[in-house]
Image (tube, rainbow over all chains, first blue to last red; front, side, top):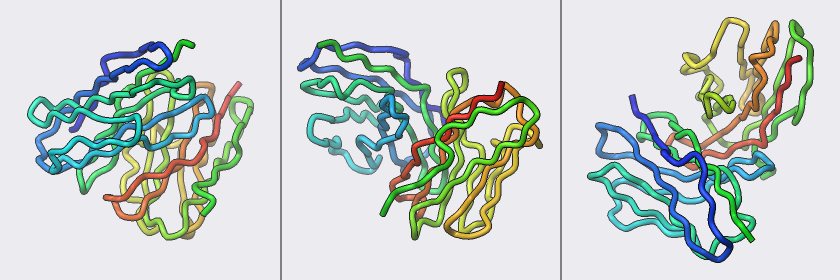
Length: 113
Length: 113
């Protein structure tokens, strides 16, 4: 079974600084998808960024980028120029093409003004 | 599209009562998922449907839990009888094809006293 591990229960960052959230996963598949979801206090789960395992180029969405290391099974999220609105729970998730999403335990990000 | 719609947003009930949570997926999406989120267990997949047919209910915790999808635009998750340990946020999510982006509803926060 696939597992997703987020080893940082909580992180904090100063506004305008950069923070990196860690995620590792375990799989025997060669083709799969990885995601980062944001859950603000409103509870809404929002897709932040998505990475296809067959793509070597790291995905980027504005201030959000990933460092995808396939061999190491690592998928970290970098948030640049952190804003107060970035404060939320962040969940890493894995999915094989034929399977369901498996979520990590989440990392709570606090942004200090 | 209005997104995935869940109701109620909040439900407070007493132990032993029946609880029904409702979900309207995004039109055209052929997969529907029910997740439960707690502090202790994180996000757990309870059950999912494909074209209104339950595919995997192995995540349903007990016989007290049941889910139905009578048509493509409506699903229910029922707990009867409810217990305090069922207190959680229940999310519904839908997607078109397993490779697509999963869209979540805003969740239903259930408190069982």
